[in-house]
Image 1 (cartoon, rainbow, N blue to C red):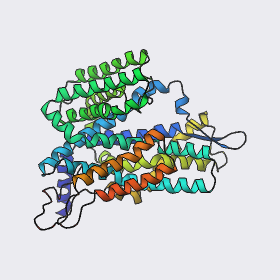
Image 2: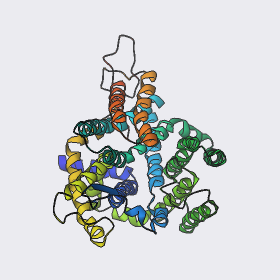
Image 3: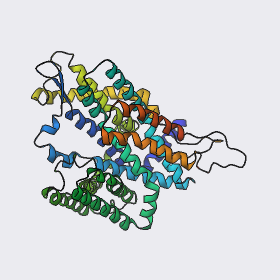
Image 4: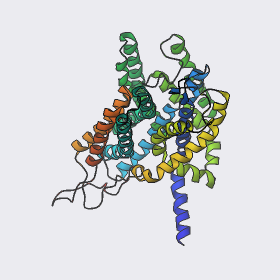
Length: 438
């Protein structure tokens, strides 16, 4: 009977989820791993010194490929869908905006903490033993590059309660205001030449793309016939051309990533439209037990895979230099062919890394009975402390000082969002004590 009950519970859970979203998230993570694997080339020069290169970006077709391969907008849109459904669930269970922000800060700061500690230890040891500073700087910059996502994503997620209310009151006006804000920020940045102005688009561009996820959750995209979805995607891509042709934006969508620019908002529309267009066959695929198991397994550790894949890639590339003939010249024919087995090795090693680290990703924001939620001040401080280290990496690139103080900041963030001790007499903890953030 217990097995039957488990099967029934499993079926009920699956029925409530959009499994295509789960599939798309896993696809995005694995595609990021593939792209980074092709971006990192490690070899030896004539003197025997280690040289790092970026073979993928050296290809003439790379900028064009980024129009399809730059999938971060889809990632943020899917995050918007998940956050919106989670926010509505939080409200149904009696939670408020502070509960939601606390859960988001906890879910992102906790898995990031061991990575920053690892970087602090590794970079510290490398500095002490006298590793070439230029090489060390290149390795640190490369392995830390994905961390920008934590800052951008958490900023967007912390704004979900506000943007969700705006969406419910005036969905079109909210989306239009975010789009207009992104255009204005880009225009001011172009007119002044001050790149840092573009950081404001962490709110406008990623907020816009996240808002698309709200529309997806409401069923707007699914209600569109196939021809409208294709037209919407095509129109979004066509609108990219004037800005790129005029030189306002780079044809390389990777360049348009940090700070984020309007082309990413257009890519978000196109990608979410195409995902919806393919929803029926993808949904049929996700009805199979094999697909559900694979996606569920990888999805449960997706953040850990994302955070740790580049250190593993760099480590594997370095180890191949110690094996005769195991490290073909980057960008050579042999190098491209060996990316397939290297990808498999990287995935296996990353998966081994996730075994002891998975508990950091699966931390629950539930507040035990008898305990109380941290104060709003503590939650705000925790969110800021969680955003600051990856934001510093985004702006200044990873180095030993950032790894050290980032570890301290993230540890403080994790401590601040923990449930407090038992309530005093007359003190309430709210009705959200057993609600989990998705």
